[in-house]
Length: 383
Image (cartoon, rainbow, N blue to C red; front, side, top):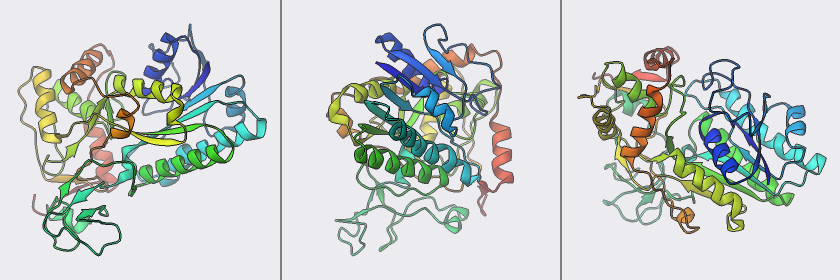
């Protein structure tokens, strides 16, 4: 097949390009090479321009889509905007509107696209799924047998250093659960834009007979994850600080439970849903099938880097962060996929890659300063 990969010069996209080429597919890459992921208009050296076609265009440009989709059999739509900054409209223009434009151009030009795979995010779950063991029944319409899908934590709670998600009825701390695909509750602009993107893709795909799959990635880690985008991605943030002789900084109390998955496992999932018709018009979680606290992950990164580290916990938090989130990947496993790369191997692969980057430096301080100025990064009243 001939396959278009938007964002194909980026992190997940480039690894998917490599695997597509290895399996004998023709590949066309559409990427605007925009900061902070990319440092200027030059192509990263890992982009295989000798075996893949490259187009430098914006996914919000109709003419670019019309050119890029010619002769294509399938599309991986990875290009997206992800940040913690409050430029809300950008999330929707890049993530949601570009997806609507993709389907609009396919339908208007009657392009015979056989499948579209859209990259979504675990962020659509917000705080995810919790259980209250103190009150197993509830009148809350969003809970059954003690199961709740809570709203975001209020700033007043976070400012007082109370991190746990509490039951709306008995106010005791609840237990986080593995979150499946059933219920979404996006809380921030990025998450809302990704959920909007899913709705556009699945509904228009069904309406016009274009097989479509949406993949909700957990926190993806591995080589080529740009260290210039230091607002998200705990491995790259902690690695920057540890490798430059600083202590990693944990927001809240470091007890947040997260779900990390290797980019290589993600790439295998991408190819699986491309080839398996059982995935058509479905939404799947893609995660590591394990959970670890941010504090434990910081210690593990230090250990793999050969550094003795004691993370700092200065009582700061990012407004809008979830307390705990980890995805149930049972549905994708039922198609024969499972994560195979260990956390240790994920870290080793990233550290090996980052040591080979001549322009590596710590971007985390600048990112924190920007978030603080914009009111995203805040300090507790008790710190």
